[in-house]
Structures are given as C-alpha cells and as structure tokens.
Figure 1 (cartoon, rainbow, N blue to C red):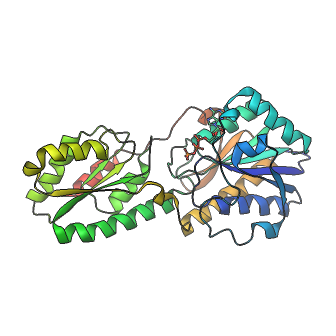
Figure 2: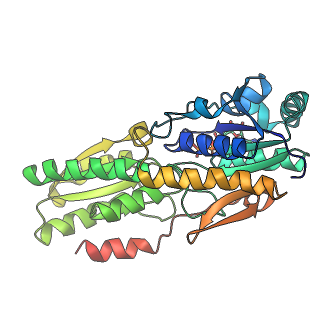
Figure 3: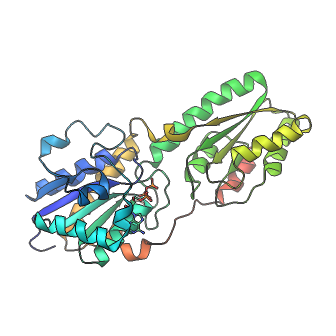
Length: 326
Ligand code: ATP
C-alpha cells in the first residue's frame, strides 16, 4: 500500500504451534521496511479493548520455538457484529494504523473478510491445526499437531501389541479430518474415521475384527473428533458386540494435547515465509487477501473467496491407508 507506515498484528481463534514464528516474521519483515508495528493482545477482543503495544525487533526474540501464542488469543462474539467491528476499526484508525495482519483459522479469516469488506486493509495468515482454510495447502500448526498425534499413536501401538488390543485414538478436527488422516497414514492405522466420510461403528468394528483374523496382534483406529462414528458410539457398539469382535478396545482422547508443545521445523519455516509474505503483499499495494502456500508457491486469495468455504481433507487418501493395512 502506498504510504503505508504502521501495521498491527494479532493472533485469533484456537492457538496453533507456529503462531509466534509468524508474529516474529510479520514484525521483523515490517521493521525491515521501516514501518511501525503494533501487537494486539487477545485477538479481535484486543481490538475492541484497545490492547495495543508497539513492537521492536527484540520484543519478538526468543519466541520462534515457543508453542501457543505470546500475544494471546480469545473468542470474540462482538466482532461478528457490525457494531463490534466498527468499534475495532475506530480504535485502529485512532492510532493511525494503516493495515492489520490476522494470524488465525477459518472463523478468524471470516472476521478478516468482514473487516476488509467494511473498509479496513487486512491480510490473513492461515494458522489453525484444523487445516480447513481454502486457498492454502497446509496451515501453520498442522505439522506439529500431526507429529504429536503420531507420537501418541506409536506409543499406544507398543502397549496394544503387548496386550493384543485395539486402540481407538481420538484426535482434534471438528469439521476437517486432516490430522487424523495424516497421522493415521503415518502411524499405520487399520481404520481412519473422518468428518468428511461416513463410517458407522459397525464398520470400524468389522475392520478391527478383520485385522485380527488376518493375523494382526493389535489394531489402531484413528478418529477425528468430528467423525460421524465418534469414540462414544464406538465404545457403545463394542460393549454390545465385544465377543464377536475379538480384540479388547481401549480409547484414548488426545484433546488439547495435540495443540501444545514446540512447533516443528516445518511449521516454523512455513510461519516465517507466510508472515514475511503478508508484509510483502501489503508493500506491493495489495490487501483483503489470505496469503497461502499452494503447491510450494506463495499465493494470495481474496478473503471474499475464502469466506464461507472450507478445505476438506483429501478423503481419497483413505483408500491408500486401507490398502496399507492389509
Ligand atoms: P480454529 O481453527 O481454532 O477454530 P478459528 O480462527 O476458526 O480457529 P473461531 O473461534 O471460529 O476460530 O473464530 C475466531 C474469532 O473470529 C471469533 O471469536 C470471532 O471474533 C471471529 N469470527 C468468527 N466468525 C466470524 C464471522 N463470520 N464474521 C466476523 N468475525 C468472525
């Protein structure tokens, strides 16, 4: 944007490992252009609450390896209302801020789309462990979440094989089963259940039972939390049909554990590239877009195009997982 001097940066929605690396990249990329940078605390709530703090290069030192977000994040229902966004915009303008970088997931980028439609310059950076953002292949945080899930799967496999058991591992993913799919393939799961693909408890049980009949000493089902066959339904089914299935079943819900911890190298590099790309996008005069990585290239997609859309997990990979489980 011509004459751009001051930007603000915030993290919004669920925290994702790598958000800090993105904040650092936005900050240092902007400072390198002699712009001023302001951190907004606690996501969109901080825009409404006037929680701004100017950032210098040293302020974002020592955070590249930290999980979560040092800026804080919050759900902010007021920002989904026109009046809330008008108040946020007034606070940004009162400080002379020319543009905002929003690091967050689908809901957060819907907020970015609304703010830019209403007249403020916004660039979105995709960061969510759900990986459900259109216009981007893999969001910041996914790689770490997949690796944490995989580590749990590998550990459960050891105990499952010792006791001739089946384990069902529930991992995060309400609408998009990307983590379950990738960790399931990497962990050699016998069954993967995704929100995008209908699978009944009887189907899961039949596959676990068939694995036993093929001579397997243990079996693993990886289940996204939003799958139609959830772990509760599976346990209920198992309770009623235990004898005919063979394996004993144990359930492990990973929950928020998959969000935590140190971001992987892949997430840090992705966050650094996308954070810097957000600044370059603004410098080139463009805004109202999401910066993303598609097929290894940085691309921009209008926020108006991603609003209301979802990137589903590639369910065709389920067939690959199935063949590998024979
Ligand atoms: P996660 O991937 O963890 O779900 P997210 O960015 O999708 O992250 P949400 O809780 O859905 O997280 O959204 C974060 C915030 O974005 C909300 O608290 C709200 O302030 C804002 N927001 C969500 N949807 C909209 C919308 N349609 N219009 C304006 N703002 C929105």
